[in-house]
Length: 251
Figure 1 (cartoon, helix red, strand yellow):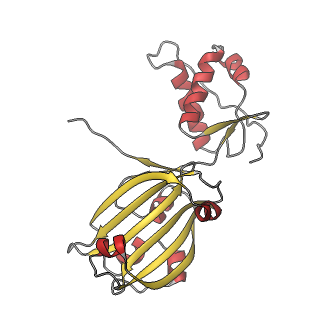
Figure 2 (cartoon, helix red, strand yellow; figure 1 turned 90 degrees about the vertical axis):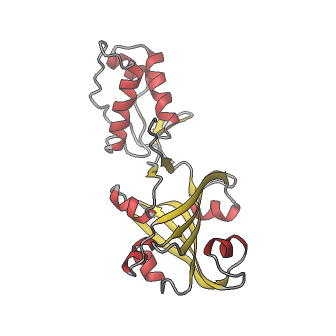
Figure 3 (cartoon, helix red, strand yellow; figure 1 turned 180 degrees about the vertical axis):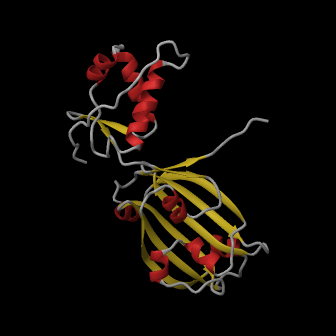
């Protein structure tokens, strides 16, 4: 990634009387500037020295703010360049929605490429998840999903053949769950497992990342309102562009 020139720093305000630590105040304002596009992907932040002088605070405080942005996956240090803004992660709440719908709702531009769409005999985990006998024909599809033109995830889905008639054009224009809803099928309940592993060589090629790079994974079985399994998915996402959000409430 070639870094763009540093953008004009936002008007960061620090309140020394506030109980909120100074580094946290700075980090939140820089985060807002990145989210708003003031610091686009590929640009680099002002140096620690420059920010410390502008704000009249210590350099270690600025460094602590930058470290927080690095931990959030918003920026990365590049040798000889400085601190660069990385492509925005997709932050997705853990709920029963489709990635296509979530991207649209968050203002991102989703595009889909159907890599394969065919019938295949259900085996192993697929047959168990869809509650069919091994060897039963099911619909198998593989798609590459991009956000704003950048590869984001690979999605493998299996559906019973009588659930939905699928074609590549419809899948590339809409999300799978939107097509299910149009058919009158509304996924009501799902069993989902979230994990992480190293990308295979083929996954790395399709996701435009390095072999053995970490990917986040989802395995999901979705059920209709009648309790019938209607979709089994095995997906992987670039960990540097995708994150899960979970809200926890104390008892």
